[in-house]
Length: 206
Image (cartoon, rainbow, N blue to C red):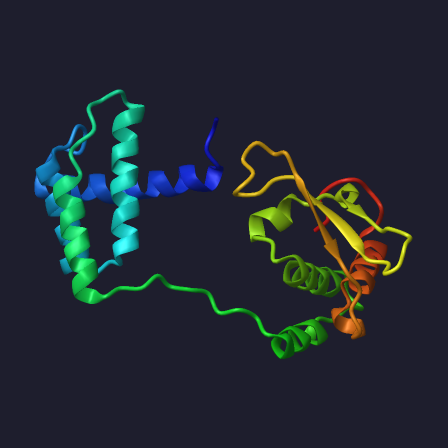
């Protein structure tokens, strides 16, 4: 099964970072040794003060390149031991994303100039994203014909998600979105207003 394009781009970027450092220090990037990985992990964590999660991802990318090239994978034991020690020392916690709260959502929605096509689109994009908690990549995949408007009460929207990060096979899933009380943040009214401006042609919703 092929990997997501975002993953491929990330791995390629990580490999460029590693190979550049190897070139600067006169070490072989491909194939590399466990010692080179230890030096690289130490350099990133101590000199560049990169986060533990970033260095772990870099190691995974380096190992992946070796596998793809059919080369023996370097030992990561020493580098991972260094990462573990630094994580304990820093007591580093994963970074979380702050959630958009309702008052902020209202301000964003009402700031959009819905007399303009771009404003109607932006409001619909933000409101649907908030109502469904979809990732950016998932919203970008939604097509107009992925939306249905059931007739039964409450008259909401059924959104088919054709692809997601956790659904690499593209089996798809459905999310039901219900009407809201405020006009500017009611997903049903906002999406209908956007479709009216967008037109009924087939293709991406946004």
